[in-house]
Image 1: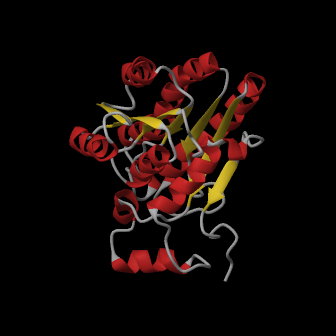
Image 2 (image 1 turned 90 degrees about the horizontal axis):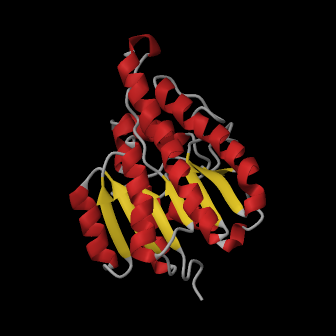
Length: 252
């Protein structure tokens, strides 16, 4: 039996990178998946890859509460309920010295990285409670949690907020058999990470910080998400799970 047999999972931010890799892995492990993101063409290609009996997509803006509501409704209507939700959508912008960051750009980062996760959870939780149990997962980061980098204040602050949200919801819903955790990836070879480290010099510097002297693949991070989604982590809740290749502890 596969790890997610008969489970229904919702993945926001599934058009590329970690989200797309996780959708593929969840489907391979027996789940039926609802995938969401802004880019419809990428979502449609993912559904085509997984098959319409295994996946369904809805494109939209994760900062819009009606979209969060619609994703959950699609899971319930198309697959009969919701067992797992992976809130993975994110932006790295704005970047640069903090005094030069416009308030509007700061709000955009917070809305995309933190508020969207709150809105997702707001509608996902009742659907999972209706099933009697569930696993709710957020993508945070080690940046601003164990390691600081210059020029990413909005990203670090908004992603760190997800850890507080994780802990609050874990306590609020533990008695209802709803587990809530955050995954904290290290440098992962995705479009976003490459944009964040736009030169070879920057990528080489980031690589040098890791004791393993390499970046993760999206598939590697997806396997850590699978752990949090599955019954293998049945006594794990409220955690900020570092899947960071040791960068948080490296001092060499």
